[in-house]
Amino acid sequence: MKTMTLEQAADLPVWRRPIALLFLMAIALPLSFSTWSALLNNFVIEVADFDGSDIGWLHTVREIPGFLAFGVIFIIIFVREQTLALIALALLGVATGLTALFPSFGGILFITLFSSIGFHYFETANQSLQLQWLSKDRAPQVLGWLIAIGSGATLVAYALIVMTWERLELSYNTVYMASGTLTVLIVLYCAFAFPQFESPHPQQKKIILRKRYWLYYALTFMAGARRQIFVVFAGFMMVERFGFDVHEVTGLYLINLVANMILAPVFGKAVARFGERNTLVFEYVGLTLVFLAYGGIYWFGWGVVLAAALYVLDHLFFALALAMKTYFQKIADPGDIAPTAAVAFTINHIAAVFLPALLGYLWLQAPGAVFLLAAGMALTSLTLALLIPRHPEPGNETRFSQFQRPQPAE
Image (cartoon, rainbow, N blue to C red; front, side, top):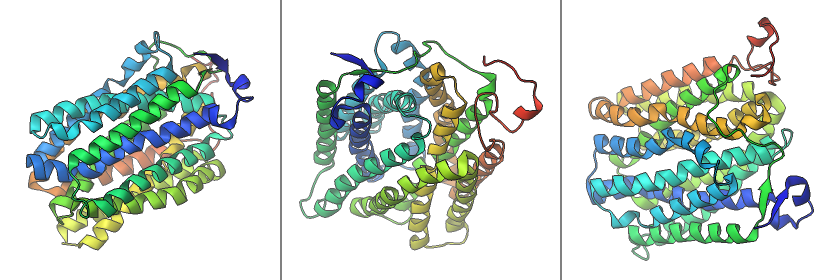
């Protein structure tokens, strides 16, 4: 396969440039992963009779490959990141397609592990490619558009589920197989339609931990811990407490997708205009209030309409996390992007390995307490976000940097 630099790629037709590849991968990922997520809670409750503890263990297993994402560093010694991204995306598609063929507790954990390897290794490589291929001035806006295009692809898939699930009496196997196959077909097209793109800065192929990236690491850790509560328990609550059916859960996801399509590009512009610190502060204040309100559903018996509204708001606030990517892009040495993306995914999943299973037991006793814990995590993230300088760059990574003696980059 032909290899070319990003400068040479600028002369290619638009549909063969790096940004086109990023957009196609942004479409392929949610076709499998979002469909899997939309059906998951109904699938495990109806087919395998899961309770809160079981769903916690499922997500713990799902996050193990994320914790091991630093393995990407060793893989890219032998395989280009672009190739790794496509292989991992294909693995996700295949595993998603086969999900309904494993309807037991052990079977679901088994196929979920393979699906998760594909998802997390793709996300690690994809994030690295985004930050290498996009210029710093364009990154916030393009990342916003990538979120929007992924939401648009998922919107089409979810709309089809809502319109046809009951009418055509679809099975879980049919939907999972269709979504996984579409992902694999897009991967095959990308493998043959695009050349290999050389990034302008060679990437370090070893584990890298920089003291000056400590704030990014801390924000990443808290984001991973906090997000697990939303991913594992917010959707599970809609099914367990309010009895949502597949088409109702998917309808709720459709609202999220439409909102993301409209607002994600706006969020990208907001990051460019107001800076990463202000954007993340806004996100974490909003998430704190949302999680406290989630707890109120259990403490005060608030109803389904509020729960659905909170679910949408929760999802939207998380979209603002693109500011963390651009913050790191601004402070990083260009050659650190790939290894740090891998290390960051591992940091992001440290809590994810034990938190879902542990909180699953707490959920059985006091569901509201799970969301109270999430509110505390959001407040911790808010405190950390206040340490981001207005104009982050190498040597000015935190607001403490101005009090330190200038040091060369590590």
